Amino acid sequence: MSNSDRQRVVRNFLPVASNPRRGKEQFKDFVNNGNLYFSTKESVSYGDGALWESSQLRSVGRKAHGWFFILSWAAAFSELDEEDQSDLIFNFSRLIERWMEKSKDPKSMAFHDETTAQRVMNLCFVLDAFGSSLPRKIRQLTDSIIENDLELLNSESFYAGVNNHGMFQDMAILFAISYGRRSEEAERLEDFALSRLASYFSVSYTADGIHNENNPYYHMAISRHMKSVLDYANIVGKSHAFEGIQSVFEHADKYAAFSLTPGGHFPPISDTIVRQISRIDATRSFGEGWLLGAVTRGDQGKLPREKVFVAESSGYGICRTDWTNDSDTYVFFSSAYNADYHKHADELSLYVYANGHEVISESGTHGYERNHPFTQYAYSSFAHNTLIVDNQGLPRVERTKAHLTTLTDTGSNEDQLDVMGRTQRYAGVDWTRQLSATANSDADEPIVVRDRIVAEDKHNYKILWHFGSEISSTINGSVVELFIRGSDKKIGELAWFGSDVVSVEKFRGVTEPNVQGWKFPRAGEAEEADCLQFEFEGTSVFVEWQISLKDFLMRQPHALLE
Image 1: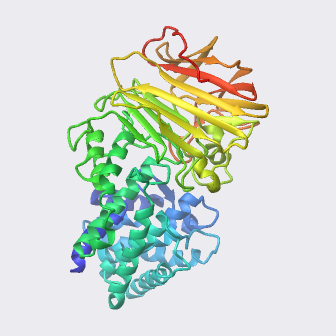
Image 2: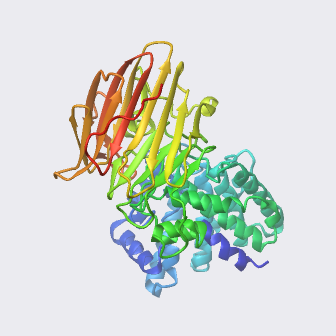
């Protein structure tokens, strides 16, 4: 098998590279303004190498030391005139030398496990694109960086383990040998990397075919890489190493389709990135499948016949009234703890999208700067539609208690989602949340949520409800009216019945004494959003919530749990 065949496949391991036109624009912006681009919308100032300093945010350091910005330059090189090519070579040369100086800081992200893997792939791609034009000294320096990084990737002591960081390390090994590295030991390295990748993929998806890192965006992204690795194994005649894994795809694709909101993005559960999912995203991950059907609303790919999805072993229940309109109603219930990676303390949380808006929402992810108050808030129970006991939320991760969060299908069918989430992670407290939602677009029934909290000792309980940033909440007796902010357009009601409420408190954009009432549309960005806190006292609490999206007349409460 020729390296060119391998290269064709492993190029899918890279992020989507800029097209030549955009690459030219980004290179010119660097020359004129000193900006380097990690993506089409994310840039950072070079600052004489400041982007590589340990004082930078981890999210910046990871992409900077991974050389993400160089992909667009490589894409543009062959389209540049001779003068611009010489200018690019000059600038790459001074950047690579400056990086060598900055990478000596042991506190930087230079030799972070996944960052090292990304750098190997990106620099290999660069040498293929314009390595022959580099001065000999710079070519040798770049070669030595790649070779030193490959030594690390080939070391068991550096291996990140059976997780997505380890996956990138093994993909980088395949990428490097496909571009002619380590030709004398390529066969051994290929078998080594494929073996570890097979081990990773065999344990990284649940029995429902859902990636276990509690995050639909990562599910899609890792599925794309799994597809590329399977393609690679197939062309080199080693697909036998992945027997049984191919069958994961159909399930993984359908979950991705169900996870897509009518607004075209994934819900902000745990660490999920909220951005529009494109046709390219869908096809790179699953080909002409279910996700492509959901993204295109049936114009391409295929649409599931059903509108209710329950994954008991994974902890998800999803219901939607249709697949073709942004005004469709969509409900995502999460009672999941599948892995520590990318998880927030969001047990038994609910997300509702309807009439083109996020009605019941969550904070999303702020970033990975662990000391930032917004990051700590986003990880915590206080940023989710969940329970607080004695003013304490759950730890973000608590692996020894992961089995204490479960989901049970209590009678769902093709027209109705009926599930019950349960968590016993709070010491001495047993909390169940039963959800009922219809997939019938003509029905007027509200979404019904029944909370049952049982304990032997008396506790203070707080149940939180967060609304989309475009929603304004007004409390009228035992009903919360929900309006489009700045208008009199009513979009929903939240009514409650059952145990006596001690108090209801509203938060929006609060930072003192504690952070509350915020939403993070993108990493590092924050916007205010309403949050209501319902307080209860006692040993046990029974409360029913009714979320009405169409019929705003008060209804009789359903029978409470006993």
